[in-house]
Length: 266
Image (tube, rainbow, N blue to C red; front, side, top):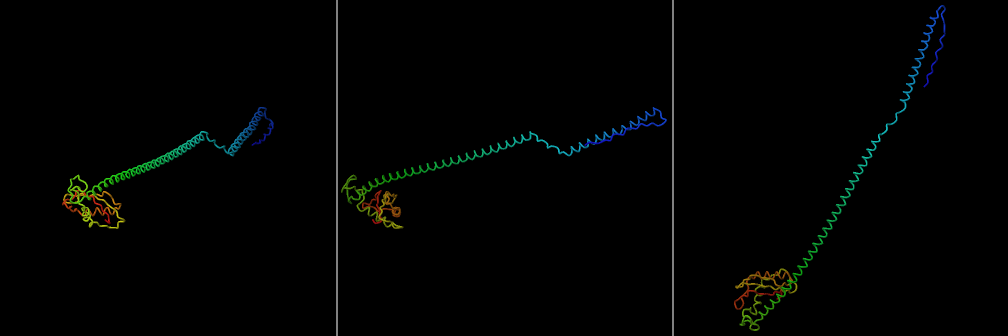
């Protein structure tokens, strides 16, 4: 902004009639001083106006935005990277834990299945051994029972009144053996005590060993060969228990051991 100034008019030299040169010179000096004062004031005003215009122009222009310090951006970036790394580490740890848990559960399932298979195998082997032992025991009992039956039948077949020695055979059977009809007398004593609670199919045969005291009191009874019918076996054993005593033989004695054969139609 330019301020225009009007140059001062030249001072007119005038002399008053009758004045001296010195007086004229003094007057000229005073005039010059008076003319210089307006010039100084005008320069100062122009300078002030220029400063005011510059200040106004400066206030009208918005200040530039403050620059973000580079250090703040770097720190934020490092923080974000650290957080991302932490989350990634946590994710990997969770995935690893899940894998390990799944592997443990799988191993436990496989172990349980293997143990179950082992137990099943042991159970089958034990059952097979029990079945084999039972078959062998049954075979031994059958052989022993057959021998007992044969010996008993030989004694039964001996004629009453035989007087042979204890080791005699044939018609000179042992005098200590039971009489020919003793077995029938025993069955006749026990038969009334046989009480069936249900029908027994067929004609099963149960063979029982009975041990007696000298007076005929039944001491024990044992099923040496099953009839194949649990109902008939139990019925015969209960009948013997109800009988309590066996009859004496014709010689007045009661054998210490008697093997008796029972069947529903016998």
